[in-house]
Image (tube, rainbow, N blue to C red; front, side, top):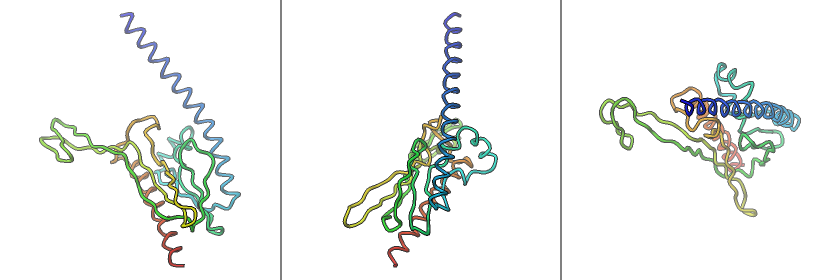
Length: 201
């Protein structure tokens, strides 16, 4: 009985510490995000493609206070100067500027898996019995290759979703995940359009 009491109290203490840490982290992130967005505006980056902007309104309300900065990883564009600015992950507040002419290649990388539920068994995407196959993601990234014939190439990774967001997985059927996927497609479309334009100049 004492052991159970001890474990319960210990669990409450750990959860409280985690909650306080996340609130502090969220408050800091909110300030950093505001500074970052102001810098992008003042430098002429008039358009952005980030996950947050693809979320439905109710999801935006849920993440606004603490987690908004997690979902503003992505890319900003200054069309006048032909420049893009990358914010690579939720902990990065220094942008990487890439001239449009340096883009070489872009691709989506997903870390996912499937699991079977409902009393049956799933093998390699094949469902046996009454099982339902559910797909989960542990991460979704955009790999952007930049460079030229003189300097060689370098790859940057935009981490649109990471399992460190407080969960180890996200169900791919949710509207939130579909928003992440749509953001990824939009980034790929925009960069491919820039690459094609520069090849045809």
